[in-house]
Amino acid sequence: MNTKNKINIMDKISDDMRLVIEYQLSTAKELDSATLTNEQMRQNYEDERKFWNEDAPLMFESREFWVEFKNRKVRAVAHYPNKQDEYKAIFFIHGGGWVVGSIDTHDKIMKTIAEFSGCAVIGIDYTLAPDEKFPTQLEECVCVIEHVIKNASQFKINPNLIAYAGDSCGANMCMGTYLYQRDNGKDVSFVKAMALFYGLFGLKDSAARTLYGSEIDWLREEDFEYYYNEYLADKKDMQSPFVNVFNADLTRDVPPCFIAPCEFDPLKDDSVALYEILKQHNKSEFKEYKGVIHAFLHFSKMMPIAKEAMRDGANFIKKFI
Image (cartoon, rainbow, N blue to C red; front, side):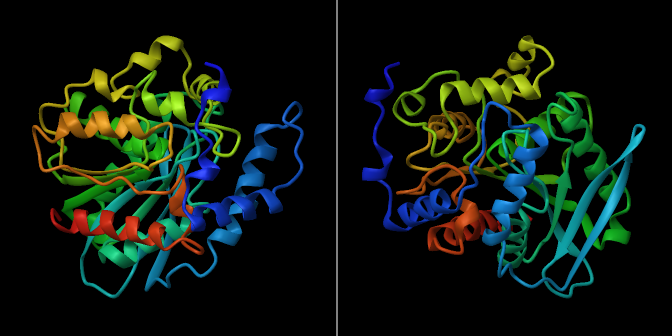
């Protein structure tokens, strides 16, 4: 497609979103994409998110822990918003195109969801791609979830009242993890709901992908190709129902989902399609956040709508757990 035909989102987005983008551009490090390594890219993302994570809600307790997985350990964290004898719990899977991000970059998001929901929020620091390839990341998530459920009393959670939540590729991994568990014969009846923020779920082309995506959000056609190439060991894995969830059977045993796309996001139609399927079979809800672009949850420091979205997701989960 001729990129001249794309919509100029800077003419359309909200004033708050424009201020965030201008701040991001003014503070961005000068990096040579031709020589940029994965480690440099990851560190830059970690450094950038420190500003946005300032003033995160105070937790009653936060506990970092490690879970044995094959010949190594997976890092995780549990945030407890207030004093309770037993918590309902949300497992949070972070975004970042599978190649960047961590439980540190998404610290404020997790703590805000914990504050709004009253639930313990447990973040999973899965191994980034391409250091490991699909489905290792899903297996790591399953491993952490099963460890916490098995040791529910130690983590002070009710093992029967659980939700999953995630943003961007983390939303994809929430669905992928759940379906991976379900389709491999595991009991997933404890998962009562999911909150899926601006996820990618498997569309290869759409109106939104045609109209949006630029160097501002790094969601151009070539960017998607890069993310998938880093994550997947084989191109045929793109058709896996745990990557392209539209290839899974979504008509049975999928818990209600809060599906939350952005107005000016090339991934918006992924959420539209997922909701149109799920609303026929469960009590899923859909809310598009106007005037914003991909990844806006990070920017609650300057954007009230980011807090609104996290509160909406938390309130949805509270209906079911």
